[in-house]
Amino acid sequence: MSTTIETTNTIPAGTWQADTVHSSVAFEVPYAVATFSGEVADFEVSLVDGRLAGTARIESIVVREENLQAHLLSPEFFDAERHPVVSFSGRLRRDGDAIETDGEITLKGITRPAVLRGTIAGPAVDHFGATRVGLELETTIDRTQFDINWNMPLPTGEPALSNEVTLKAALTLVAEEN
Image (tube, rainbow, N blue to C red):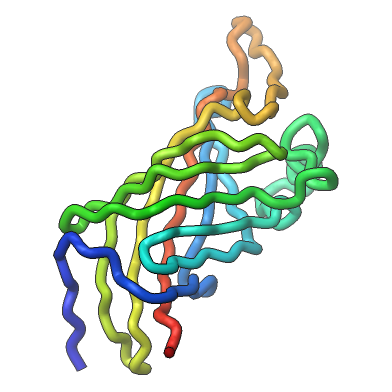
C-alpha cells in the first residue's frame, strides 16, 4: 500500500491524538561550551480542528544524571511539586509543508506567548489503516521569564547556563475514528 504526502494549505480537520511511542518532546540549552538536553517522557498532545494542545508532566523529565534530574525538579528550576505540568495551546497555520502556531506556554504557573514553527507531513494512511499526521515543531523561550533563574558563573565570570532554551516536539498524530 502506498502513502501519499499532502502539501496543501489546509490543517487536517477532526480530532487527532499523539502516538507517544512515535513522538518525543525535548529541550536543549547551551551549557558552558556545549548543549545540555533532555526529554519529557509523559506527555499528551491533541489536535482538534486545527487547535494544538499539549501537556507534559515535569516529574517525567529524563536526563542522563540522576542528581541533575533531582535538581531540575527542585524549586531552583521547575518546582515540580508545586507546578507539575507544563502546557501549550495554539491554533496551527499551514503553508505547504511549513507549519506555525501562535500560542501560549504555561510553565511554573506563568503563561507567556510562544510561536512554534516547523513542518507538517501528511495526512497519510499507515499499514494498519490509521490516518497519521507528522509535526516537527520548535520554539525558543527565555527561561527567566518563567522564573527559572538558577545559574553558576564559569571561571571567566560568564554564566554557565544560557537563558535561551529550545523546545522541540516531533509528533505523530493519529486521527480518531468517528
